[in-house]
Length: 481
Image 1 (cartoon, helix red, strand yellow):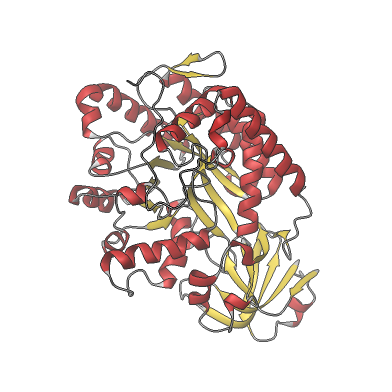
Image 2 (cartoon, rainbow, N blue to C red; image 1 turned 30 degrees about the horizontal axis):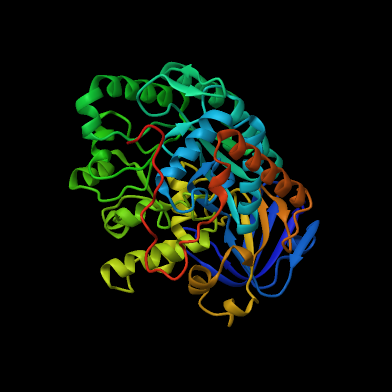
């Protein structure tokens, strides 16, 4: 008789299984890296013989949360530029493409993982850079550093790598070495070969290509088509997930025309979509990643309820961790519900259960991992988080979905289990040195800002008080009139 390694006794279990069961007074057993049993009432005798038992009053069990769109690097440029978007993009490019060392990427990955772990995010997609489509793929060093940090923390990340935006060559490093499209694609392929083992080694690699619009096609159409063919060929060869950042107003239909869409594609932001975009999504089976807390969601709306009603899979992403948002997926669930309810002036839009699905089973589906994670079911990976339901703002103990999506926050996560391993319990993380991670992150951020010449970009201005609006930004990129 095989005894479980772990028994969890919970006041409530929100399974997100096919029946969407919410089990009161329940139990879960874990054997190895898998859920071996789940039920209600007293646990069976064999379960009570588990090597380890977690049984505290008021615990609420959920699947580990999934953040389908974030940015590696952003954690160390948090809030830079004091609200000036143009300046922030310039800072990202100067640091990511110029002065960021492997130590920078490692420190940022460790800091982001610590924040995710404390917030119950067990799986995340992270773009290797960002800002103005700056992906650090001139060499594999940045990707190697990120993946090594991921394995150390015990969480799971899928790192999106690929070429930057036209024109080429791009320039990287302190010496501004010229790097062409083909070389960046070679580095992406190398990273896939070395790290794309999502479930066994807790790292995965996705491919990314900048979003192009019809205006770009008029100028560089032949080049963009050639790049798209190369990207589609590499995805077909490797089977990697394909993602993009910043779709809007017809760009999804163009991506379909370029041969980039399939069920293995997940597209970020996706605001102000056209009927042709909807058709492309229905025909391709691609998923949408909604980022309700992002700045792009201020300039336009991702039509989430309409997409869901059209049969298109939609999941949630944080777009974190800068310039004004973090990895707290509870915040992003609540933000999504309020965002779309306000648009329709209808409190029935985007129910609580759907909001939770969007950062659990729907996100797992978008990543091609729904058979392994995203719900609490016997045989699936033991990615489980436990909330402390006895907090005053989560009391009384009724209506679990309402409590989780409207009132819970990252600080309510008590215990995190990934692949059957207890990474955090009662908010203690014994395998990580929290203070060392914080100190390393502060030092690397300070060094990067100083080396990039943006050391003055980390101070808030005096114009944030007693005004209804922030004054227009004064910053102009170098060379602008």
